[in-house]
Length: 534
View 1 (cartoon, rainbow, N blue to C red):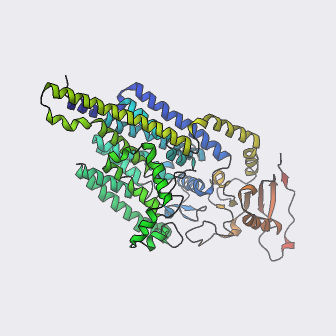
View 2: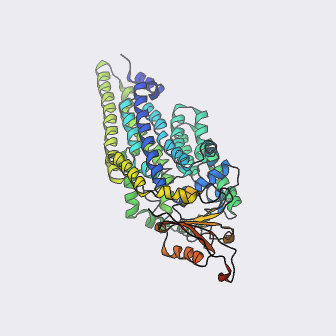
View 3: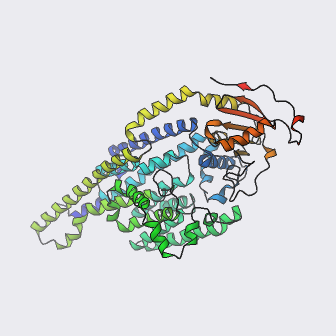
């Protein structure tokens, strides 16, 4: 009979992916997630439920990189890397050489988030040795309302860090340091604040005996963070990390950084408790069983709370990209610890009888770990049904509803017909409603109306707006803009500075009529408006 320690060593050296049956099971979960969320996000986009902020910003930036058209983003009003250090865009841009469509970005995001299940499975199996436990945890990850809500909220380069952070943990556990380095690099370039999370991973490695790797990770993370904050951001925007300024998210933190009462007021709030509960309850507290690994999730949580913004302390948005993967990794670590609880007593082997008791304890540990993993799956299903924007029980009906709504409204077809009236050419400038912007971003100058006439989320403080005279077309959706903004558009058409070309009562397209003049009556008359009403 093999000693329990021999069995543990064998499991640690094996791979979850060596068993084809369970690999197929995990692949089915992965493909189901990808199929639903690709279909869902594609139809959400075509239904005009996405916005200039943020998918329009990122799509134009990636398209410009793919076509070598520079770095200035006319939706954001600044160089794209002056907003955040999203250098991962360099690796996304080549996909636009093959399929230059916004659906490409949505598909990349969906596949990347789902792919996190594979390094998680690898790490969890090395810790628990149970295929069933690993499949349950992987399913819980894909059912996470935090992950799913993130997937549905436009598209953001930083969320691509999730599989790389999980890959770092899995590779470090196996001692696969080259792959660890690749994952570390790719995670870092997703956004500047990821460096704070990788720094915490470095501490974890250092404290768990991997001192050299931990020290290198900490030093590299710190240097990269300083590079982004002190070199890259100031170079690209002329200011630096401007979100410390008055009125931005972290301005309160900057103003009270040495006020201890500020931290008690900030952290001990009901909304922070609710936020923490929604992050940890689907994992039934198991991350706490692996406290050093749990610690790596804290930088992201602390950043979000210190922002003082409700968006960041919510599971409905994308800001949990540096927290959720490490909570799942810590849960896997916790399961592994429970599965091997009896191993701590093996040195007290006093003979045949005692060995039998220890083996019984080992079975108890493994059964407890499996039970807790299944409990995580049950808790995650409950959380999914309660907090996900698209709970799993409505997946089919949601897709059917989206399909029927798109067919019934005909809005996408009317939009396409109007968009085809705009002359071809990357340099044809237009200003458009926030919900139409994502479908019009593959051009050098597209503005989020009322930019550039009136600064709205432009630059750092609305500075250096472009000349409105450069805009040749206006394309708006009355149902998506407020009365004050619509009034600006009406003034432009009533003065005949712009002439309506097409109008369906909801969407309307207008082109520049003549150069601005102090004598409006001198303008040429506008022609007939194409009526596209159903």
